[in-house]
Length: 199
Image (cartoon, rainbow, N blue to C red):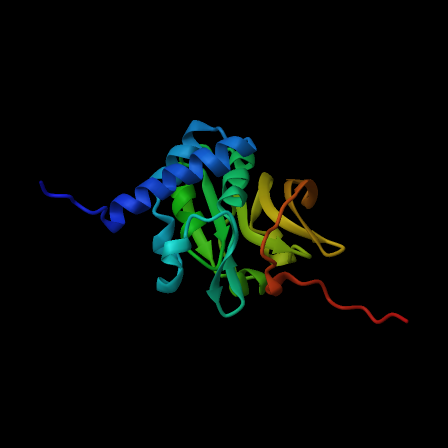
């Protein structure tokens, strides 16, 4: 009798299923399209080689140079809140390509920016949705300008040292963010608020 060992591909597929069943579903991420996207996109392809075995654990993974890939639950919750429509123009600000790949799988027309480029207000066309793959202290005016009137943003938000999932909409040219839930979301240093002098 021949015993076949599990291949890395089989192990990764099993890990994705476990992520869906033990991290996402039990935490309220039950949108079939979001779950299907997260089952189809191999998260291990977006982390350094040394972290591939841990790609599906329920915590952020370091990517190097101070950047991190948020835990799967963060991405699941972001995508549920985003409610992406097929063909929608979406800008993803991320240090990795994972969230952009998920948005594309959901039918979005995706453009991507690294956090440093987004923070400096790099120009581009208007989009219906911005996904920021990390927690920010402030939304740069240049990035807010990319959002079409009535457009949405889903991001992490840092308030008094606590990170929260937040959503916003552009109304009359202004974007206001509404915190939804405390979540451990890696902070994007590029979006830090200017430090003010105090006693």
